Each structure stands twice: as structure tokens, then as C-alpha cells.
Image (cartoon, rainbow, N blue to C red; front, side):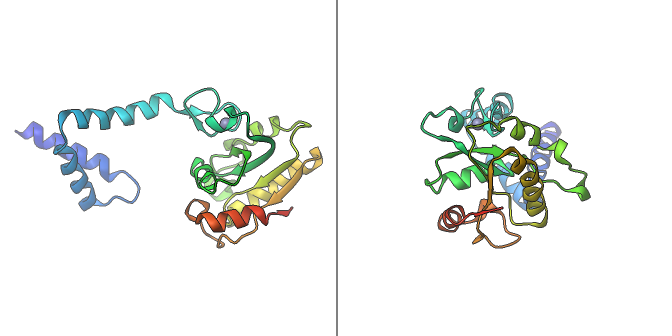
Length: 198
Ligand code: ZN
């Protein structure tokens, strides 16, 4: 009996570690999981394990991918001459929801933040520079409109412009300090359409 209680405590503890989950919610989720059928519980656990095993970074854009190339890089219909630089894979999902952007992406996996000890080496800047060739016409900086996001956009712009590529910044639209991820589709679409040269 005590073993089962310990197992429940461990489950609650795991949920409590998730972002935005307090003790009470963790308990609620743990009891929900307890009430799942054996099969449902297995599927849930397997989804977590498989996500870890299978998902890696696309070898071109560094977005999350199950294969060597993510589905966006793999599609022949996407315009490879325009690269939209974002902080996070969730920003790719947000822009994809507009259904209007037909270029490709580059996922930085963060922003330059000296306060948090994050420099360009911690991001995928090297990989972005490696993509620059004569086929690339424009790089759109779609980092979040925060101090770090702006600084990162400026930093990258200074690196890219001497390579002869046009660099633009989203026209915000998206409120300063806000997360791109939470912008609605219309706002995001206007931000892309109204982008200005940096
Ligand atoms: Zn990709």
C-alpha cells in the first residue's frame, strides 16, 4: 500500500515540475492519469518517451524534426530564398498558422542574453551563416519584440548585411514585450507583410 502512495507522490511531483503547474493542478492531473485505462496510460507514457527519442533538429533550419529535414525544408514548394529567423519552434507554428508565409525558417533556440550567459555560440547562429549563399535573397528577423529579441535581430543583421542579403524586421503590430507565439494570425500576418528593411 505504501508503495502505491509513493508512486502517486512521484507522479504528482513530475506534474508539479511542469511550467505553470501548481500543487493542486498537479494533484488533479495525477488523479486523472490514475483513472486512465492501462492502454491510455501506456500511450501517454509512450508519447513522452517517443518525443524524446525521435525528435531532433532539422539539419538545415534547426526546427524540431523527426527526420533529417523538417517537413517545411523538405517541401519543394517552399521559397528557399526567404528565411524567417525565429527564437523558438513555437514561433514557426504561430507563423505557419497564418497560411501566408511561403518561405523557410531558421530557429535560433533562444536569444542573445548576456544577463543569462547566452551568447551567439549557444544559439544556431553558425548554422544560419552556413546557409547564406547566392540563392538567399532576404532574411526576415522575427525575434520577439523584447530587448533581447531586438538586440539579437540587430546583431544578426550586422553579420548578414555584409554578405549582400536583404535583412528585414517584422513591423510590430505585435505589442512590445509580447511573445510572437501568442499573437493572433491577423496581427502576425500584418507584421510579416509590413516588414521593414533593417
Ligand atoms: Zn528545416
